[in-house]
Amino acid sequence: MLITTSYEPQAEQLELAAHLSEQVRGLTGIQEDIRVVSRRQFSISQLRKRYGAQDVLLVSRERIEYYQDQQPLLFFHPSTAAIRAKRLNNGEPDTLMQLSGLKSGDRVLDCTAGLGSDAVVYSFALGGNGQVTALESRALPYLLLNQGLGAYHSDIPGMNEAMRRIQVIQIDHYDFLKQQSDKSFDVIYFDPMFRRPIEESNSISAIRELADPRAVTEATVAEARRVARRTVILKEHRESKEFERLGFTEVHRSTTRIAYGVIRL
Image (cartoon, rainbow, N blue to C red):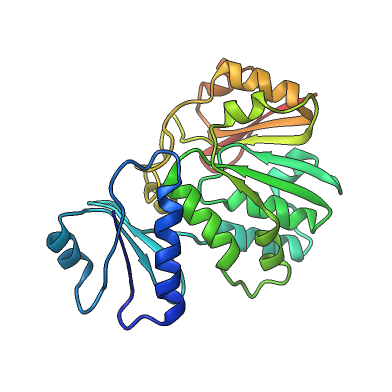
């Protein structure tokens, strides 16, 4: 993997590139060599050819971008979380927050964070009165999420604070749940890669090749039921058989192609 900067980098970009190289080496699941290289006037494709590497982390002035062979460019962005935050500020309801029965002071566990859109909305809705922990097992999504939450700037009131409050951990969600005490989180949320993908979703297609493809297991749901104090939620395709397989008898289907399964405790 190559780590480089945009053209004519400033000192902070060079420092961040060096810091990223140390971070990446310490992540679980990274086995390839990591090399920080000067951008000079090379394009990304020229750098790949010059150094014989396909994966590139680019430190620009605005964000960190990940270039993977033949895959869409990946970078952190709050995505639909920004739209949902604006709606919450306007007093409009949010389906996931309503189904979660979110209360002031709640501890929320997002077991499949990806690039963190739902975790951001949970944190925004809590407004500092509670805690959101986001788990991501795969190295590159974790890195982009952790860096992005700390660096991204939004003009939406309360959004930056919401992103900064989220605790991000790189760990398999089953392993994390096994370590937790009974009823130690109020809400536990799963949004795995759908068994039946929604192919038109650009935001998901960018991360699909890097995300954990495994289905949520019955053992994981059993641990979630033990650790959750009030609610366990699963997001899936509205036609998914996962709700029935995993014991989610309360299923809320929308006019879109997604649905939420809810276990009330």
